Image (tube, rainbow, N blue to C red; front, top):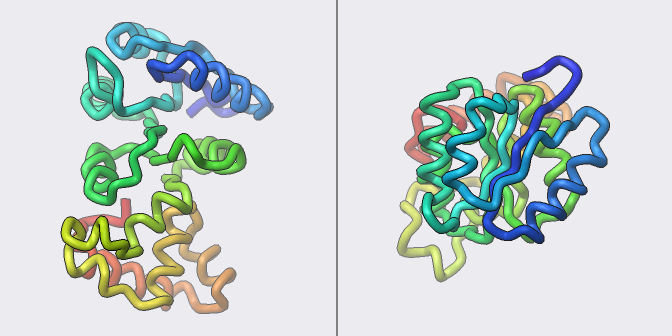
Length: 203
């Protein structure tokens, strides 16, 4: 990303969302909003030439679904960071989107602070998933009981704490200091989480 400025493009088929998110992001001194797109097809054509550092995008858009847009842009622009902003908090969908190597996943109902924190975390090379999204992955409400693998539900309280901190973008050292445990212990829990969740990396 740029050293002094985080260059951002926004894609959402609702103009109200674009206007609100644009105003919010412009409150961050390090941010420059390059462009907003209500048409995902236009975004697909224009974003490569704009070469932003980060793109916030919706999923449900006419003409080109956000997952397809993200996949196409990331194939063409490997260094691009994509943060999904959606109403959907379904665990299976979240896992499918994460597999696209996105930098974050936010809900439209999240607080302004979550959006600002996401920008700064991604700018530092981290991933960011809002607390509500993380909670959807580690909890077991009845509506998700059948779709979530059994492994996902077998987390200890400490593992849940660490998973949430990882999703918030904290480093191993930061997690250790916050929970008063050693970095080695945090790494042990990371490995256990990867095994239980059946994933190849913590992304």
